Image 1 (cartoon, one colour):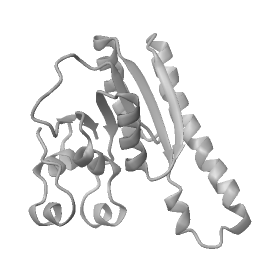
Image 2: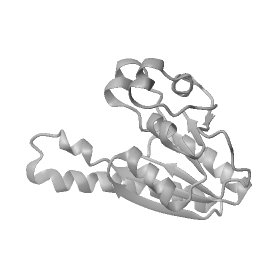
Image 3: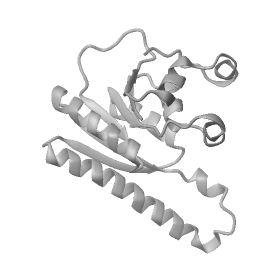
Length: 182
């Protein structure tokens, strides 16, 4: 599906058919914001992962595509340090919380690395800190990523508006195609 990549007030007023399909589809949705698609294939595939079931499903799809295109898989997990800003009373335990989040991210990229090793695929792993969708966008630009494959829990209603969606932000801002698996 094509997407206009609208942001801000325009997106809120007009909505997005693509985002609605992504949230409700039982099959993977391939989105592209650009009219021109690079036909040279996918040589670097990014899997942003938090270790969730949705991310695992995205990994399965990325592995198949990587095998077909002899691509390198990039597994990226982001410690969302902005989430800690709203946690009150953490005090001296902040470093413990941060360490725990980093450990979870290491496990998430480790699982992708194991899956790729089983299929004899090249894999690069990275754990970073920051705002997830911004870190993902920067990684896409820095590493020459040609396809992003990511999972989404498909939240709807109030939960979606309160929690936001990293996947939707990546879809709206990415210059490369994004395959979304729910």
